[in-house]
Image (tube, helix red, strand yellow):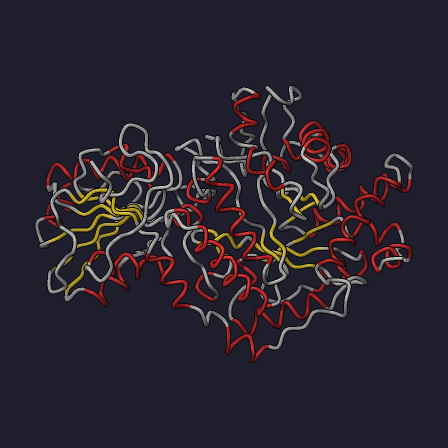
Length: 540
């Protein structure tokens, strides 16, 4: 008898159901009510967010505390995709966003990035990545995926996604590809509403589902998407609740035998439209193994109570629970989570964390894409007066009335240029006179939009068109999605960084000042402007 089978035989029904929960919580330490819930119910998984992270010492101590809980130690996962989605900010290796990593055009770099990031996560006590995103970003106006995707080409997404998975697995950590069956064609944010795709079954299978189908038999975990594709499942249920997608296609047709995890069930699209009873009924019908609940202990407990009552009353067969729990425990045994409680040495983590920064910087240097340099403005002289125009920043799931007054470029530009001044514009129409005066005050001006949503993209683009009319030699740097140039096609100098992390801003400054010639290639097509894999060195 295997170890997981012996442990399974010793679990009560309450403890089995606890294994089917992944929970998150607020704060830098484990709240007493959450600790009690984990221990009383034998909760199987924990999801860590930026709100739980302050320092290497604090984080490693918290992970050790979490691993000491419950009858079976929880596995701890986190969204650590790279670039814009890094729960540990600059505390651990970030590398570029996935589109930026693909811009290196080198899968070996991506595998190396996965390995280095996994080494840091292992030092902290994290068991796995809720990554990579295998979404094919075939919709430029996608408000939630965008540069979190490697490409708009399914084969490219597969090749680079598999490389990242190999890197993570080489360190013995879990990789959880997401968001099955594919979120790349959405124009809506599934945190808020249910995206419904009009694509035909043939198109969706050959494009969006291709990467998932290709890795289904090779991976141990997968995460679902809250999306609907009526041409495949006419019920118009979110794929997270779709037996058609998760059982008939993913398991029976594609051959996936691993642990199936929902995207967060506390996203508005689910929580605001389904009762606790409906959520439980749907996840059982769809063959889900683990429910992700990222925020509220009250909602987590409510779902647990509904779940256990349905099992004890016979509405949900015990055999259905057993099949998921055996699958979970088998994977926990594979990743050594059934051994003694995982403990990480805090001083060792402090000493070794991010000790491969030169590799991170090298890979990131190769991700910067020069798309236009028509005036040969680059490289810039470092003794010039440089003006930088940016905008207030907002995340894709946060309303525009809560932006932050932040500059991504300022602190790095001041290390490279003798004089730097920054103008941060509001996410609304600013005073044109202020813009004109600023533009006329500097030898060179860098305009750095950051967009992840069409609304922000258009707000910034409206002003960039005005800027170009006043001064057509500005250097435009897209620090978010690279698609911005669609709305100001007269731009003469245009670069894409695919994100704003420190290593990306350093690579940008190295590129702008001629320390390193931009090597990156655009991994998506910007229709009618740039073909896929274009850079300014491409043959014209």
